[in-house]
Image 1 (cartoon, rainbow, N blue to C red):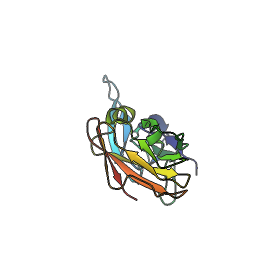
Image 2: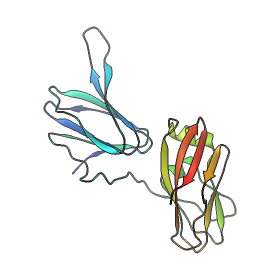
Image 3: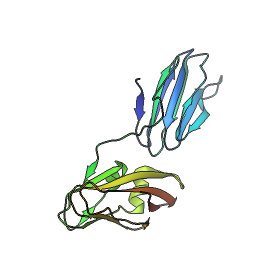
Image 4: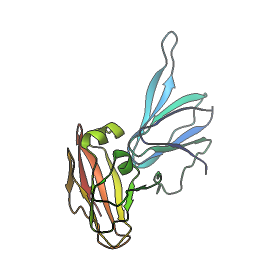
Length: 203
């Protein structure tokens, strides 16, 4: 099935024809609004649904209707039609190109690199990759407090990669991959306050 992609923190506004529905799928919270108008008043937005880790399908609209979707930290997918379908099981995730960090004594991950969801490197010895600052993460994401994002670190050589803290970014749990080519460490990055994040090791 065809569908449309809204990338991280993006917004899409489109028209749903009369008699058709909109389906929206999102991993982190995405807000779906219907544009409504009243005589002698500016057009306003009515919230239809906040979609999180599920698929929402609206009722059929009686008239052609303008709909706006505001995506969260992991983006969103949407489709329009009489019986719109995005996936059969909801097991999906937007995935851009992974970020590969060059080997060296000073290895730093930018906020944009973390937000790709996959960080790789080919270390020539055990290396550390420093996280971006909390302020840079907040600037790049506009997350609300309590929102989070999962990312993976993969070593492509037989040496461990270890993520390290930065200003207002802390780590809970083991921060290192195994020292085996292809070993992966997965983390959940959660905003706990303005410019402040915690990276939890989850696998």
